[in-house]
Length: 349
Ligand code: TRP
Image 1 (cartoon, rainbow, N blue to C red):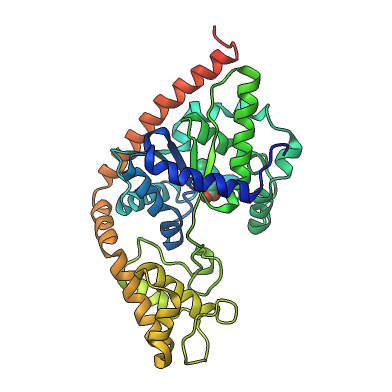
Image 2 (image 1 turned 180 degrees about the vertical axis):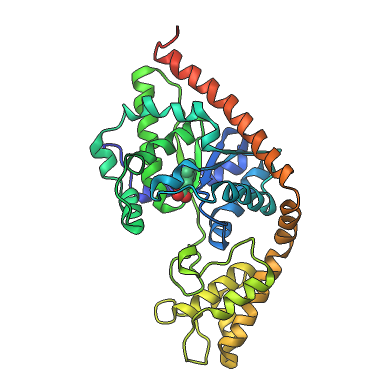
């Protein structure tokens, strides 16, 4: 990409924005999203959801997108999609996303947002799409063929961000190529037709990625993740089953002892203590004691969140109302932006 910026540049810009957000929250519109492929887990919570709630409560204009069309980028079915979407809304609400402050909406419910895809596709070359390292990685990880949708979903993601004139997107490092492409599309559109879209920046998380219970990348398919929606008992069972090693003495060593260290990281993030401190405290009491400690740490941190979640589980009508209201607001914004786009392009009849 001609305007590609290095990770360091993106990080510097992200730090500047993080500082400015405190002073000028109303100058920002934050948009971020998740694919509804299952329940949200601790990796999502500590990696992004917690930060979204903080930004929302600071007065940043926030929007959260349930990216249902992205589900079919690398899989061939929409099985369970409705259930996953409602449950995602429940997870958000339980974690403190406040629908009065944050618009929660679904891709498929906002046709005017999706229509931006046509002009935006004309602003990117095939080579730019083929080069995207995240698309390549997702293709390899899923074993799915490179469909037109998988190849072009970063453009679709640019529509998500730009339809509401989002200018700050909290994402992990893997999403940076998509933010770069969004910047490129906005710049090209503005140069060609007149300024409609803002300059977008990533807000990178400064908390290190939480590994799964076995020390590998946290993923539902590895069975190493704890979902927000699990009960205390399910959580205890999952932790009990996690793999450690025969050495009794507990130490923090992610390379040599991924299982023990994954457990320590989970306990550390839930208690605010360091992994080393917890390891020293448990010492020769062994993996059984460590697992007991982790279980208590997770269950007590998530108890109020899970209690709220149970209330929303009992009130599906409310959950649907939240989504319908978010969809309604998103449609209003998307139609206004699409009108600006048509005007800028002279397509007014
Ligand atoms: N691609 C993101 C993911 O896989 C989800 C997503 C969709 C997103 N649209 C977005 C993230 C817009 C940020 C902004 O997690």
